[in-house]
Length: 352
Ligand code: ADP
Ligand code: MG
Image (cartoon, protein in one colour):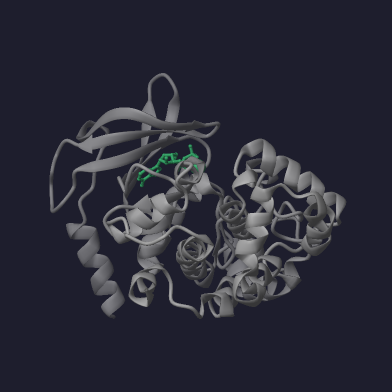
């Protein structure tokens, strides 16, 4: 009963917007399926509106609105705050879905990773200050650990809701300045298996740089979408059989790798890494054996970081980047991994 009351209250009191309420500003991004702008809400209706982000999306806009509404209700803190979505018909371009989010901040994890200062730039953002501590592997490891914990926490809540993101990459992770945490954005390629929304794999939407080798979520034995009611009854079983959430885990593993190894942060280096890994049959341990003997000092430093505390970071990495989805850890299990036993960033200063 409470649920109905809440839904009713929200329908009556939640502010709604239309095109004329928005003043579009700087373009933040442009993909094949939409354009993203920074914007202002002209009508400052309720509380703390201010800066927002607007995406004008074509084909997949309806799915993206649906996913954002679901996330807003089920696991709000894992993704950027969704404000509202509506359909607008442009005389020139036809139907367009408009999506509005709170403007979470200026930097994605991709921006932060490209800086020479990484991971210290992230430390300053999370703590809101620069710590007066010596730089070194141990400190870098704590910062990376804190980012990984935040990412896995967000992924675990998405997965527990039944949503697989399918496009996890540094460009789709935004640093929320208010909560001082990383949040996931861009649910345009996401799928909700529990209700059969966007069930048919759209391989062409996936970013090959971060995609797991299976490329698509479901096995070829389940190629088409059952109708919604059937999917609802069936999907927990399919989830168990196919472990579609492990697709995101592979991507988050590659992000972990890029955080640990500065030399793997550029697009070209990541593409080359993917080629090498494929040649090693996706066996990270074999990859390490092949590159370590002639590794640059920079690459060697990455291994050193992952080898801290008895190689617990390396162990976590190898349990995410694996060929078979079944052998990859889940987000929930990863959070319980001993890599996270040590206190993160905040405790570092107290230890000195
Ligand atoms: P695309 O489909 O173009 O990849 P995204 O949803 O990933 O669309 O958004 C594009 C870019 O816009 C992001 O990489 C990020 O820089 C910025 N952006 C998106 N959402 C937000 C937000 N809520 N707050 C701040 N910046 C955002
Ligand atoms: Mg994106």
